[in-house]
Length: 209
Ligand code: HEM
Ligand code: HEM
Image (cartoon, rainbow, N blue to C red):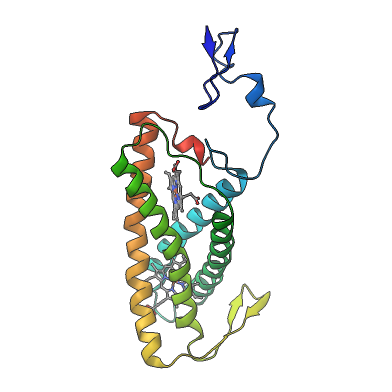
């Protein structure tokens, strides 16, 4: 006897095969953009990886560019690219958070202990917060004297206000500490995900890929 492996389904079906692991009822259910109780939907998956890859790239780019001298051939381009791609993260993060507020998150996987659930949930909330705060402080640094942010020469993102040098200096410190804090949080987050995927083997990574 074989039962459907999709959690909360449990339908009984006859064919035992490496490929047939879910019953027809699950396969034939309508495609949805939203999260289900078992897994993240296409919108969550797409925004997760679009934001994650950009943030990882921006941490590297930020770390690389601050050591370049004014006359280095990459200095101007790397700063412009860092600012422009950072503003894309701000936009994607705002859209993602709006999507998260308007949709339900999947249930936790059954094998997660209560402290693991609390830690995962706290980490996700922290990541939502920093994916807004890091680009926002970057925006304050870069527009503090009223200059717009060029987007690869295609158009300019205007300065909405001018902050004084005091606010700019605070923004530089916050941007610096939060950016490297994100690197640590992401390492812990990824380590937890990989542990669940490859040691506990509960398919955690598959829910977001
Ligand atoms: C800057 C990098 C990253 C950020 C900001 C980030 C953020 C998040 C957030 C906010 C969630 C909650 C679901 C959502 O709204 O998307 C999540 C879920 C998840 N992330 Fe990441 N993530 C990052 C990198 C990674 C990496 C590198 C991995 C894997 C190696 C990973 C694996 C996962 C998994 C498996 C889940 C689903 C957890 C569950 O089933 O509850 N993430 N991530
Ligand atoms: C999630 C998005 C972002 C991440 C992860 C990030 C990360 C970083 C990192 C790691 C540094 C180097 C800090 C140091 O070692 O001194 C940096 C510097 C910088 N970032 Fe970002 N950044 C992001 C978004 C932005 C945005 C949107 C802007 C502007 C529109 C921006 C403007 C800057 C500037 C001007 C610096 C140099 C600050 C200084 O003078 O020390 N960043 N960023």
